[in-house]
Length: 526
Ligand SMILES: Nc1ncnc2c1ncn2[C@@H]1O[C@H](COP(=O)(O)OP(=O)(O)OP(=O)(O)O)[C@@H](O)[C@H]1O
Image (cartoon, rainbow, N blue to C red; front, side, top):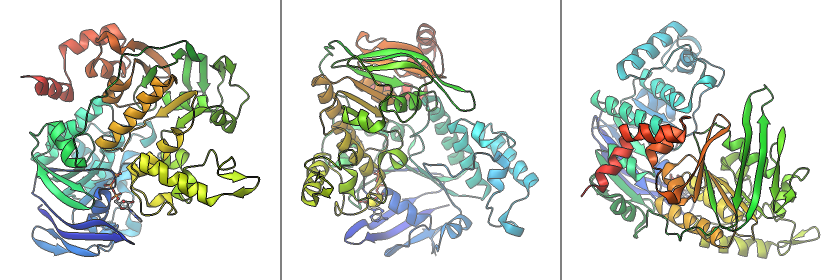
């Protein structure tokens, strides 16, 4: 189906989030939407999916004008959307998930389970999804859950599929698989609108690329453009895609994790006897597929979770018995993996969110009285430094785009004297310009002598930023590699993240390159 957006305009108070946006997506085209944080991509997709009523402009499907009063109308017209946070119920089976809320079905909007099962099988076979209709959602890896969302959309006859940062939570292998699936869908005539900040993927799969900046279309780019060209078109300036840093000169060990074990209430061992140390002036990256114990490890360091065994020593002091507030005040900077649940308080203003840890200390308060002038001034400074795009620092943080909310968390946690920085997925959802800035700040922190732990599923990030990389798999550390020795690459790390030990990973990687690893090689070739 051909999709055409003509002059779409959407305003929020004084802010024009979409300013006369035109976009044409041909049948069977993979169309990437690129743009810096707050450019207006999600807003545009929400208009297309019927979640927002546009203030101007039209949507055309196969040259016919359509209006959507809600997502139900959009779905009925053949539009499907896979959100970043999947909307699946964990205790349902795949078939139940697909059956739920099925609009054209009979009583109660429920599709019969047998019919749902049949459709899951049919779609799964047709596109090589390998999804079992009777599998429980909570037992499926993230990549397969995402396929269930795609099946759900296809079972409702989606002809245009919107994928909003679909690879943010995927492993390299799952990303490869998704790229394959997108190719199959395209062959079958499905149009795909694909939002991403990952330029490597755009180059690998997009047929056309539209770039938006500050609510306006600023141009179209060819997939043959280099990542550097795409980056500068996106943010309007040249961007360095590699981290400029001197060789690490680590000092003494400042932070030690000793024999740490964390067990879930159901008895699953989440962190399994993990030990490592981080030295002054060193960045240790903890790589791994989401859900292999990294989250729990980071949370135990801040005291959000209790360890079942083991010790944490910061500058020789045992952290046991100290609560979260005491740990933050003792100089631990902490960027949580999920900003919306742990990083910000949605109903608080941007300014308040910037002092969550320090709200009762000078200069923001004395005794029980807050000093709004200082709170406001701090917010102006921090948002300027981290280039947060907002209308007023007194607006609730929920009005910010995803990337801008992430920058608020980073600005708060990295703007006080630190003895240890722990950041989980620090650049998730950030545009290339912001990633460049945040990486520089992290390196600066390391230059100041702070031990830094970065938990990341992004291979580019860990390879670029880490002095050493520890790979976690099923709660254990598979291996710790020194980046300076030059023997690790995306493929080796990708395999280690699947539990393959270092030496074997090196052998296997030499024999097989992933799609994106291959794209790297081709780009490097003269
Ligand atoms: N409900 C809302 N109320 C007020 N402002 C909003 C609302 N939703 C979005 N905005 C603003 O509209 C602008 C565009 O936001 P949008 O979420 O579309 O950006 P984006 O391109 O998707 O960014 P990101 O890459 O960070 O996800 C931002 O300045 C944002 O603060």
